[in-house]
Length: 124
Image (cartoon, rainbow, N blue to C red; front, side):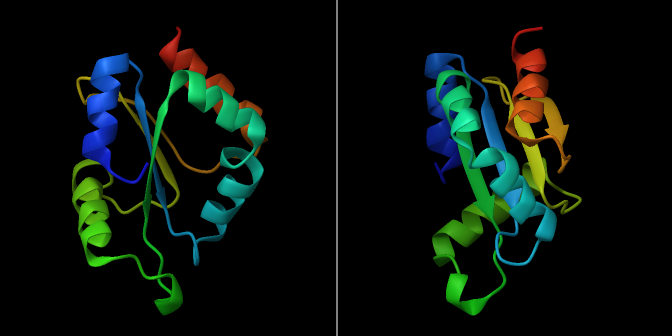
């Protein structure tokens, strides 16, 4: 998803947390590695489908990758709330009541690393 409001509504309805991924998809090397090594892997996507609601807040810099104005504004508003320091990449796990459950940047270890850490927060 790219709309946090819709994701939050689904979070309340399903009691699944929202995982917001703040990315600089065309300029941030750790963001590219995080996507390639973990978040885009079938193993992670299968886990996410069962346990999370995914939202990507992308901040591309190249003109050819520019987002529509409304999506840029949406992502900036989301960053003001959950990524004030402007960290990239940043994963923020938000509960149905909009409390922050987990924050992480890029760490080597692939999909299983993130699955294990997220699972330990969701199912302690």
